[in-house]
Image 1 (cartoon, rainbow, N blue to C red):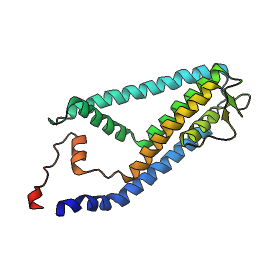
Image 2: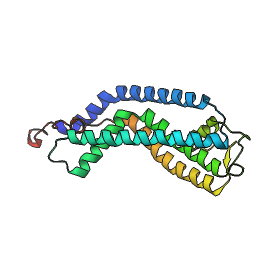
Image 3: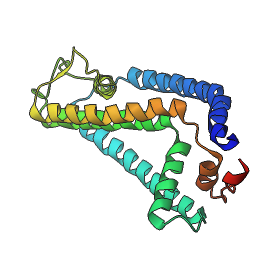
Image 4: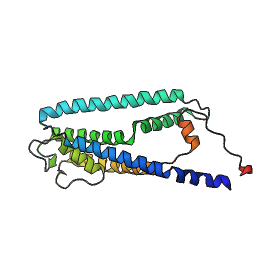
Length: 211
């Protein structure tokens, strides 16, 4: 019966460290959100185009880094039992873990901030209610973060069809992202999974007959 109780013991041993790591990541995420929220350049229709160009360029660069990083990890995974598709999924998960949930969360909020700026730019007068005549970047970021945590702000509301549609989609994706973040607090894993993700040969399983 020793094999049946080994995993709970491992999880209990790793629980304090995982909780501390999760709390630190949460604190860093709060600090990053505070810093971005304090960046308040005014967004005019002309400036919105510049922000969108640079913003989408940065996101594209980040995606390319993830793609090339994933390919490098796939090349390092030399586990015969893994098919090509499974190896790519494992490599993608490892690449995302190396980036960290903090950067992923900030990227998620910035992605939707750019979406809302684009929606406002296409229809400045009727896209949102509650925005000042010349909104700031922090206004859209505030709306993005609040909606991402499934709690759209009451002082800024979506008015046009495009803004409402984008808000509903972020609510759905935000729920999934929040569940994944909370799940990271209890991400215990196993030695075999860690070895496969690192490109090493997983340790041999113990013989059930000897348990």
